[in-house]
Length: 250
Image (cartoon, rainbow, N blue to C red; front, top):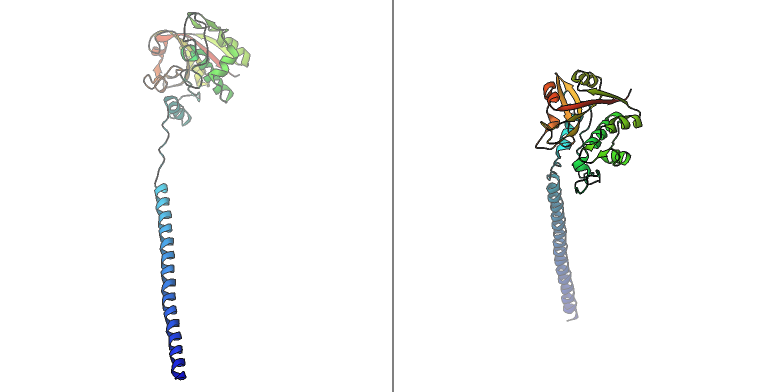
């Protein structure tokens, strides 16, 4: 009887061990599969995210008009154009700066009165090979050259050239002299009357010459006018010009 009990006990123990072994193996297999599945999902998610962002192409920044013109100047796409940058008096970085003394006028700012200051800034940036803005010219000039009802006095050009140590020449309306100076990389300032470029008096920079035509840096230019990316003949300049000045380093 004791032998039977012992045998039965051994069998029960063996069955219990087999049971535990069987379900233990199943548990380990399932755990492993779950872990593998989790790893696979995580890996797939990473791959999906990576593809999502690697396929995402950032749109290039849209350039404003003056940036487009300056890019073409820097890339030498405008044949015969000196590396004189185009600055606009309407640029938000300085257009609201106070300039002018017209009594009762709200528009005493660089945006409306700053063509001469902006032209000098363009020329100075070219001659000094560094960034000089209309705000910098304004800091020097103040309202000392502004004439009520007329705008900026022409005296500013010779005085500024003297202040900077530049050479200054009054060329009158001698277009041949203008071309000679441009051919040796001397920038030109021009005063124009109402006509092709303006409804009132205006100051601009003549920034190069090619094939008997001339480039203009118009400080009051816009994407609609596009004066600064087209060439003008001698006749067109003379029809509009009141005076030319050469400002350069010796």
